Image (cartoon, rainbow, N blue to C red; front, top):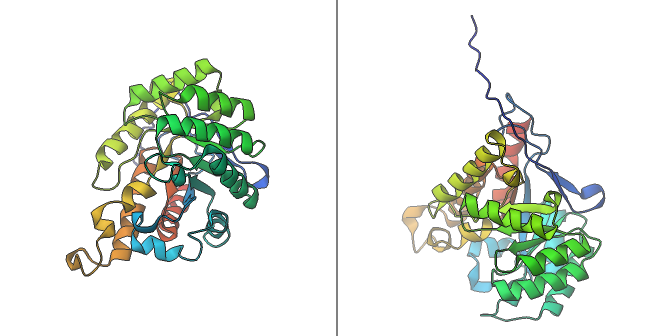
Length: 315
């Protein structure tokens, strides 16, 4: 007699969110079971990968193996975004407005909005636009971006508990999607989703960013919070957690010393390029298995490895 796995019964499902516009628009979510458990439910929309672009040359902030990949476009965010799409096949682009950091260049909301608009008009895939997590400055910047990018259905983040009203209202007014960011806590994530709902932002325009740690630097916490979010959504009928999840992993992985140390500085760690790519890929795969729907990645080879895994598990 053949062994039959007793199926898990799920009382909930993940709502769908569509980002971008036209033929290249992407729909996220829709799962009716745990990630890749295709023997128990459906996963109608496979997870997607966005490649990261900065609006300024990152210089020494980035590890050498990643700078080498983008060396010809580091000073031009439009060309950089196009390279990610045309050469590396990115499903989406994540534009990080690093120049607006009040502790750095402190660029104006108006200049950042114009850059975002140029990038949005230059690509045909969905565009995610991230601030620097400086809450007051992000509120000003992302409100300006929302107006400048009207009609493009961009994704604005990180929206947090201290600035959700201004960013949420701008996104609602100009028909964009928001990324609700909370510090690795399921209850805080649920509360921010409730606040956005009270503001009038529909669930179909909210992605959840539970905060991400890289491999070896908080992965256990990140994995656990994503996993608990999915358990509450699918088996406990928690409607305010039944939303697609985004994880911004590129920044978290490539900033650590194991990715930045050169072969001469740490020969015992193996080749610097390979180690960084594998650390990012393993982080991405781990979070997808926990329940992520959209990853923001940095190295195209790491993204390629993760895409291969997604295709294998959804075939």
